[in-house]
Image (cartoon, rainbow, N blue to C red; front, top):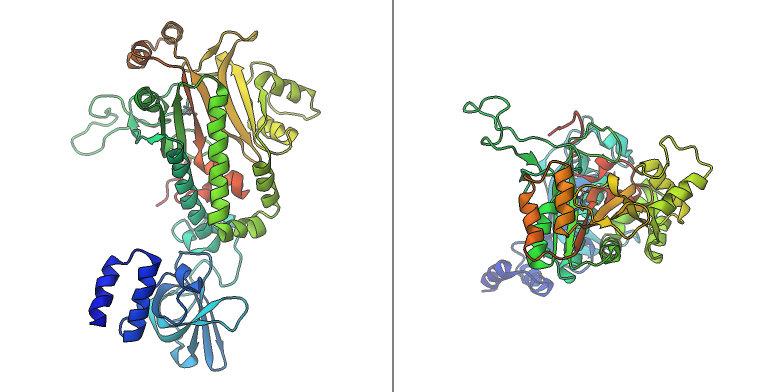
Length: 484
Ligand SMILES: NC(=O)C[C@H](N)C(=O)O
């Protein structure tokens, strides 16, 4: 009967309470050990339980009559120490091999860990030749070295921590928007618009025996999206506050450490926004809430970076969270750059776009914390940016958020909601027909509104202090590289 109860519970097991009951029943029956993730095992909550753990061997040490293994399954940075009699040793139990260990969770006599698994059985599921495996036991490999093995790099502590942080930061971004009344919209990956000015595009061309070379997407031009902004704008005309978070593509032939051909962008659009402050509040709120969430929920993983990979970066992150983000205008930024004794490679005259070197200087100048730069020259901004007609210089109500180590993290603007002004600008650019649907949005219930986009990988660089964007995305795509 107990076994039947265990079976029923295993189907219904969702809460930790029912899980604990299930473990006790199974333990009492001494029949089927419960499968446990390493993160659950090392927490100490299941002491005394008979369990099965599956994962990959991170270290092996044979000592007198005992064998010690560390097993990791990606659920946590921590590995579970397994202690076995040396009779269970096997030459195939090597670093990197996959194992299934059954035994009893005991309190560990070693201060280094709460729990250890006293093994009754070790089954080698998949062997791994340590001489051919690119990663070596107990060695801290550099991110440059690890990058050479895109198919295996998730087996290293650094990249597995990074990917847990990335996943948690994704959750945090979604939570922030949900808690603040935004509706998530799945904007399309294939689009016909190029969100003018956002960057170079990848054209979609079908391939196969039925298609001529260079044919368009079923005879209409189609591209991979460079931004979901215009789609979000139309949705903001019905839902007020909307966001999207998905892959975005730029055909920039750049080998820089800040650019990817495929990256993830968080974009939001807010109806009835009256000023740039209505947008900067959202950018700052999202940044703070995601960062606080990641620091609280991925403490060990973040520590791995802040202590070993990018030492000293923790203080920078703490300073970012402690202080409010200052705002300067573009004109003030230009004055700051012109007053500095720095030898910039790019010009700093009013009207020139800010380059990464300028952005990084401005961040340092403001105390190495994130800084908003507002009101850029009108001519630097795409057709949708709102004309600041009341400003002495011809500027647009646009804003960038610049952050330590990275430069531009977010870019946004109030959108031109006035039909006559928008039509004139589109006419000037010869785009009136292409964007007639966009003009319609200003014809039917137009409201002041604005939005922004944040490069998600740049956000990760910023909070972790990592300096190559290829290290913060699971599968980097950049010019001349599309491996796997
Ligand atoms: N949604 C945004 O405002 C982002 C902007 N369209 C960009 O591509 O940078």
